[in-house]
Image (tube, rainbow, N blue to C red; front, side):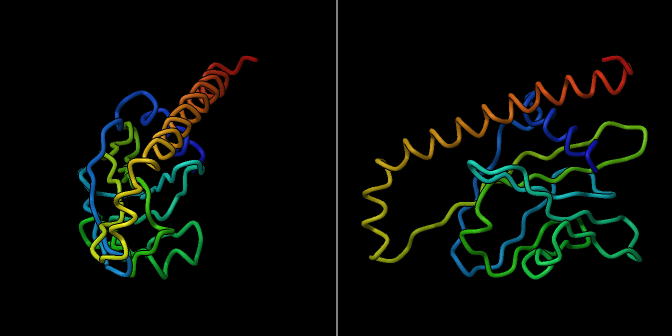
Length: 171
């Protein structure tokens, strides 16, 4: 699993997953995120601003095996559909962020999807005040996102070094 995390960091930081699609959601809504890679065995990850990478689950192409959840509490919120899509039950602010699915096969590099960024759609009059204030907070959100990508870039460099040492066997 550590190798998969390493590949994920490398792919994200090296540009394979730079762009993402935006998906607006309402709190309490059920959401389905489609995995855009050819689906066999698929893993789902979440990146939240100013937090580390969160591994959600790994599903297997065999219908006999149940998905593996990194944290058993994730099974209450997340499930995987037959086509590898991620189903999020009763979404809350804890599930907002950028989601990636990765398909892994033996003897081939992982295939990573474009990210899917979930954000809250505002409907009520109470939220109109928030909409007016959003441009002021947008700078803070952009700063957090910049810090997130900078941290991922630094981690990528460190992981590249670790991978190089692991592959060459030299220190």
